[in-house]
Amino acid sequence: MAISRSKKTKLAFIAILAAGIIGLVILRAREQRGSTSFEGNGHAGNGPSVVDELRPGQKLASAVRIGESLSYRVSWSSFATAATATISVPNRLYYLGNDVWDLRAQISTVNPVRRLFTIDDEFTSYADVHTMVSRQYVMQLSELGRDRTQRFRGAQDGPTGASGGGIIPSDACDPLGALFLLRDSDLTRPLHAQVFDGKQIYEMSAQQVGSESTAVPAGRFATSRIQVELRGMADKNAHIGLTIWLARDAYRTPVVIEAALPFGSLRLDLTARIPGR
Image 1 (cartoon, rainbow, N blue to C red):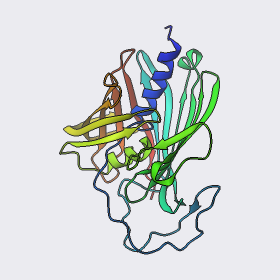
Image 2 (image 1 turned 30 degrees about the horizontal axis):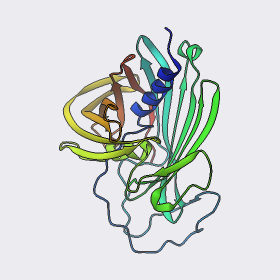
Image 3 (image 1 turned 30 degrees about the vertical axis):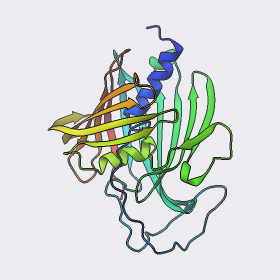
């Protein structure tokens, strides 16, 4: 199957998006920050420092569990396994004066798709513990023989101070933080929000549309079926439709993610999960 460079790039973008790695956001009402001052290592100019305990009065978001690791098989068009993806929560950190979740994701193509194009991408999100608003989002992209790093910082925290990056609009989430908001939100009612994918802002709506039993390599789950629509705010022709099946348990694990694309349908199936603590 011959695929143009633009379509290859878009496929990578959508694959990551569908995995919750790029562009999916649901913003809920912001929780009030605790007034207690943080006492710890302070801001480290070269990166975040580990926070060992919650501040008094802080609430741990139910969907965020340190040590969680989710693995997926990515199917595309006629390829049963086009790529593999993982999402994990290594730690909780202190960054630019804020407590943040350290969220990670990786995606890699596998043969025979890898012979068409090679993708080995890694993503890091520092998402505010209280709101999931993005404080920093880093994309380390290795695609089609080209390596590059893009670093984005929340507008409230000032410029990145480095090339190859940009600013995340205030009160917006990056895709990883957004996925955890989705997992931790009541979707029986419509939710509307904006999503920033590193290039443009999308207007998104999401709602639960059904409940069913879903079988994947990781097992059988009782799930809620969530319909998600994203439309570009500047480019009105930019539209992405997703269906996500979330486990109906305390973890709200994304069990299946599907996207219908002009150049082939995309599906992610959960193959393994480590729940975390």
